[in-house]
Image 1 (spheres, rainbow, N blue to C red):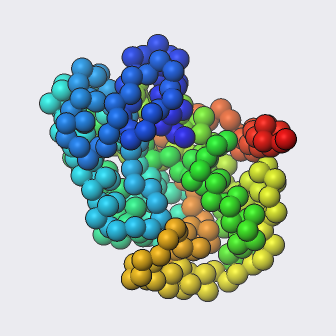
Image 2 (cartoon, rainbow, N blue to C red):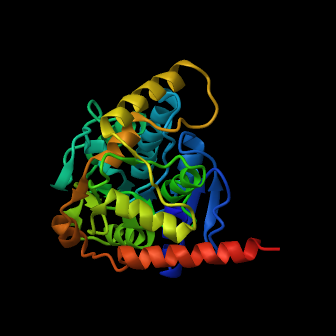
Length: 320
């Protein structure tokens, strides 16, 4: 969702855009290169004669072999950086995640702390942290300039990651509130994330070489956030409350079961997801907004209204 939206915006802004992904981008006006960021020949072809790279590719599932996360999130990043440097690319926007600096405790008005692959909470976060450190180490003020943007919980119409999972679990009656649901969580509406990434491309060179967390700047209690998403998506709101400690313990057991036995799909809960849903995580946005010259233009309530409209149109189109 985010990569397609960024490519659409850059085409609309008059840029010559080339996408690299495993399936067609469906971005009108963009040139597609099919393949993986783990393939050196494909990466070389993708970055040839480009002025800038926006790196959004990642392994984002919540389970799977660590080696698979490492190959994409670390190895793919390394390849992109190497070939971008060789191709004379001037600007590299590396899309990361606040989870790279999350140790399982609440984050209240936090800044962009250092990426920590040793203490991040799951395979995705650990490998994204390692990839971010590679990207920042490659920053060269006189050559390949690198900036890191960490959008937090990006969502919007058509989102299969956050919204899709919430809707699926709510529809099946498997979306409890952990604890009292009062933990404050911030999110990022997709249009705001796109604006921030485009702003990073054009930011003052002095802003490069650093990580920046991007959010709407509107933390809400998690129970209120889940209720808003469910209402906008036309699915039942969560009613059951499960003690947070119990959920974290169950998540740990399910993590171990999925690592030990070959099971289809994703576990109903993981330790990382339980921590995310029961601890506060919201961020001080002053440094980000000043460095990028960016402010969010779509508020949370407006985003939920747009999600509701999209849901209604999807239902209408599917009706006999």
